[in-house]
Length: 144
Image (cartoon, rainbow, N blue to C red; front, side, top):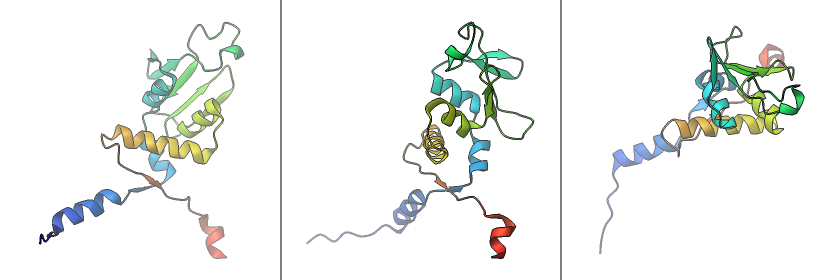
């Protein structure tokens, strides 16, 4: 009869690897390079204008020249504190989640999951899971 001995170190390592880190949406936005994310999603290399990356817009029908000059911009460092992207011709500007909502028409919740999965793959650990912490309710909700 064989007896299987448990390895306590392996048990701890399994527990650590199964426990996903909790990240709020702001932490996810800070961790994402929006330039890399947009480039990979659109399958384009950026055209650089100073610190701003430019891509061909995914809605060329909105552009009089079919977006011959890349007009979709992406900046990892933005005045608002989080990476942002947008298209001045189409009239939108948003964060990485809003980019997915604009491009694919997904819900914000689906966009958050999409970005969390992308981050997990980029971390070099495709099995990594990121659990998104629900937003805080603020002072008013806590008073009730």
